[in-house]
Image (cartoon, rainbow, N blue to C red; front, side):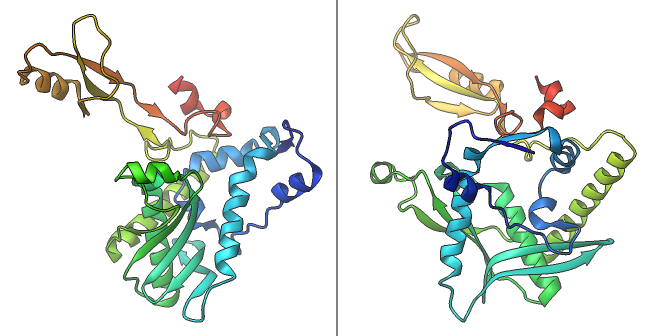
Length: 293
């Protein structure tokens, strides 16, 4: 990969942002790799020399590493910090470095956005359950809770004072849904199978498995009901209701009896957020991305 410096950052900053000490240890895949798209990983490896990244894009990753370091330096004797565990399944060794383990289960630090905290992220649920699976099989430790410590880099104090649904502080501990042992086992087996299949397809020069909607961060199309004072006036900025289907939106309007009020349906087109060149570095090499265009 070629690193650019389009914003002319100074040498000390470039050196700091270039540092990468990540390793998955002696394993075939890490948990973070396993829960992500095999298509993206394989295309990234295949076209590594053709990819470019501006050094400024690494800022948030380095900030996340710094947050991890600060918390790691102040852990007590009753917890385990940054332990990498290994488990073998179906011929592959899977590893994961868990930020924190206490008597109740794994905890993961996230330097993230407010949006990620307000809206449930399935990736967090997958990752924390995978860590619980690691602890159960590597150490025979049963988890009681799964937690994320979210540090929100874009938190706004005024918004927190005016919006009840907004996080009340820039750092928050979130409880993550925990699956049954059988569900964790089945998920891990399925993910390993999918990545192994992708490896075989790549070796045989066959089509890679497609990214799922979850892996593409898909936002579905929705239908917003907006009011108008007159047929020709501008619709209200705020939607009265938002529906998942046009049929439900039309039914809602037909059942309303607002005298002198007009309604319109605004179609909010769905979007594969990650399937964009700004997010996915391998988009230009991906048939699925090209078909989406």
